[in-house]
Each structure stands twice: as C-alpha cells, then as structure tokens.
Image 1 (cartoon, rainbow, N blue to C red):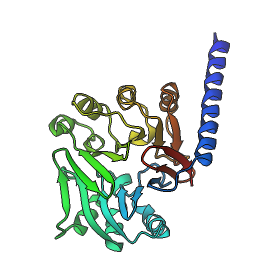
Image 2 (image 1 turned 45 degrees about the horizontal axis):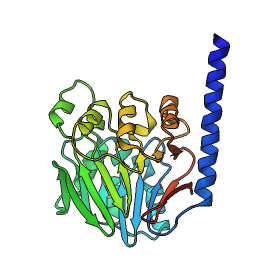
Image 3 (image 1 turned 60 degrees about the vertical axis):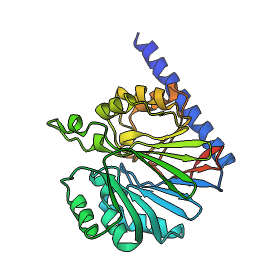
Image 4 (image 1 turned 90 degrees about the vertical axis):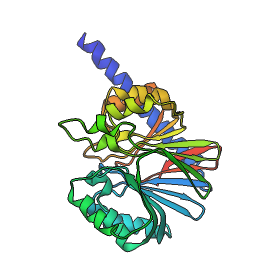
Amino acid sequence: MHKKQYLGAAALAAVLIAAWSLTQWMGRAGRIDDGFKITALPVGKADALILQEGDTVVLIDTGYEDNSAYLLSELQKRGIDSLDLLMITHFDKDHVGSASYIMEQMEVESVWMPDYEGDREEYTKFLACLDGYENVVRVTEPFQEQLGELSFTIYPAEDPEEIQDTDGEYDNDMSLVASVTYGECRFLFTGDIEKTRIGQMLDTEADWTHDWIKMPHHGRYQKALQDLLEAVQPSWAVICCSEEEPAEDKTLELLAEEGVSVWDTSEQAVVTGCDGSRISVWEE
C-alpha cells in the first residue's frame, strides 16, 4: 500500500517536472517582445506587477516596504519615470508596502484602490501621500476604463458586509480583481482572494474565462481554487511567491490536472508577452 502511494507521488512529481521543463523551453523559444508585456517581479511572497503597452504603464501592487529601492530601480531600468495608473488590490503590507515611496519618487496619474480602511503602517503612509491628490478612485462598483490599447474591467467585493462580518482578517477578500483585455487575449489579476470572495464572483453573471491568470494569495491552496480555475479556464498561470514560501503542492497539482502552464517568481522575474492573439511567458 505504502509502495503504491510512493510510486503515485513519484509519478506526479515526474509529470510536474516534465511540464515545467516544457513550459520553460516553449517560453524561451517563442517569446513575444512587441505589444503588451506583464512583468511579475521577484519581491518575495508579495505582488508587484508592471504592465506596459506602448506608452501606457500600470503598476499593480508594490510588494513590501523593503522592496522600495528595488522596485524603483526595476521601473527605471525599463525607462519608466511615471505611471499612468497605480492599482493597489488591497492593503496588506506585501501589496501596499512600497506604494508611498513610489508615489514620492515619480509622477502617478491615477490611483485605484478598494473601499475599506486598512490598519497597517504601510497603508497609513500611503494615505498620507494621497492627501490632496485628486485622481484617486475608491472602487465601490465594477467599472471599465481604456488605457492605451488595454481595456480594464475592475471588480470590487460584491458584498463587503459578508466579507467583513468575520472575527478574522478580511483584507484578502476585499481585493480588487482586474480583467485586462488586449486584442483577443484576456488576463485576470486576482489579488489575494479567498473562498468567500471567489464564491461571490462566481455567483455573478460576469464572464470569467481568461487566457492567463495571476493566481490568488501566492499559490496558497484552497478548495475554491478548483471552482475558480474551471470558470477561468486559463492556459497560463503566474504565481507570486518566494523560495522560502513557495506555492503549495496541492495548488501545483491542481494546475497540472487542469493542463495549465505554471510560472512563479521564486527565483526571478516572470515576463508575459502578448501580440493581441498569441501569448508567451518566460523568465527574465
């Protein structure tokens, strides 16, 4: 019995390794440098994603406060000295950490964030930078916005009271979810959404099918992930995690079962390129 279980685990591991090797080779061989580009930066178990299309630049989340200098240097390395949009999905320290520093160091045209109050020092610093700033949207209802050739649809929590009526932390489920369309391709950014929020999302009439997904909550496994993946039906997934705190095995197993090509930021940046009809992903 134990031997059969061991062989099953070994076979699954071999499949995962083979799938990873294949996606690495495919990414390097067919990389798309023109059009829309997403760079998921290696900022530990945290999110910081740069979206670029033509002259349009969007930053979704800013990692930890300790990531400030690195994040600024990565933006400058790409010739970025201003942002059309800074979107903070929620106010955990691994998402809003460097936001105040970025606001102080470069011009930011607009800021989008969820409509609730955070309780962390990083959030307080961020709010101080926004004092008197006009182009701030506290998102309370789904809306659409066109930035360059990118079409954004932003989804706040459908029922904040249900999410906040809990004894535990509710920040993750208050995350803004962003659907970005470029040409024929769709990309889904999920913040750190968990069971309650996923259930709310899937109860709506929105079309959640997307080609690419930024997996929620750094690859942490939850039963609701299967429902989410069945609704999204992605071909590519990017996980923002670290070597010390990698994606959970159950999450990777689920993605493998769904036939999704998986990339993570545990060692280096992950870049996604899209020309409007094709997508490629590679490590920078």
